[in-house]
Amino acid sequence: MSKIIGIINGSLRKNSFSGSIAEYVKNHAPEDFEFKLIDISGLPLYNQDYDGADPEAYTVFRNEIQALDGFLFITPEHNRSIPAALKNALDVASRPYGKNVWSGKPAAIISQSPGGIGGFGANHHLRQVLAFLNVLTLAQPEAYIGAYHTLIDETGALSNAGTKEFIDSFLSAFATWVEKNS
Ligand SMILES: Cc1cc2nc3c(=O)[nH]c(=O)nc-3n(C[C@H](O)[C@H](O)[C@H](O)COP(=O)(O)O)c2cc1C
Image 1 (tube, helix red, strand yellow):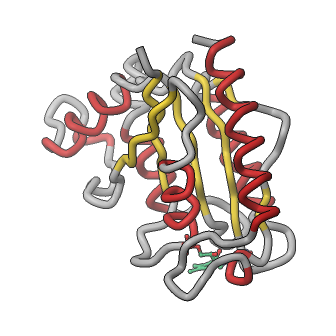
Image 2 (cartoon, protein in one colour; image 1 turned 120 degrees about the vertical axis):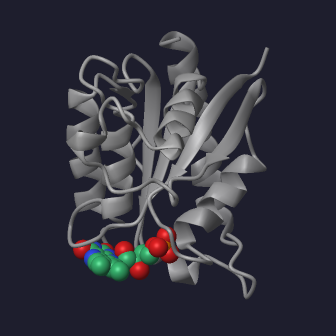
């Protein structure tokens, strides 16, 4: 049976660069893997007062996360950290206390930016949160994709051959990581 990996895009932007990478990944899954886009855009901002009276969107999202075999986070950097929407999604599925549905599952991170350091700050802030949530995050290889705007065609699709090759090899390492940690 295929392993189902949820792609969590840290960007809510229409025509997002992270979404462009997600599209490429979805269409280049390693054998016996399927990548599924997980929507985080409709989650109300987490507030502990919701615990026990959860919005329907929280329940749907937590069940969705629980059913996955692993996670691939693809994210831009916002002010040297992760976008607020991504932090919100991480918080929502980590609660109520004791019911963290991220826990124990394998994950990997791809960060991207138009700048030269490829979202390094976001990538490492995300690693810190995932460590606390008991997510098994792939350490090597790392994926920081810089100058993403130069790697796409006029439709926004990833077109740079070297980057495609890099993502393919990254996905292959991630697939091995998921098999080992399932
Ligand atoms: C609020 C905000 C803060 C940003 N801060 C950074 C930053 O710290 N470092 C960086 O490289 N890019 C920064 N950017 C640029 C985005 O990371 C960049 O536009 C990214 O590639 C967009 O990805 P997306 O298309 O998936 O949303 C910022 C953008 C926004 C909107």
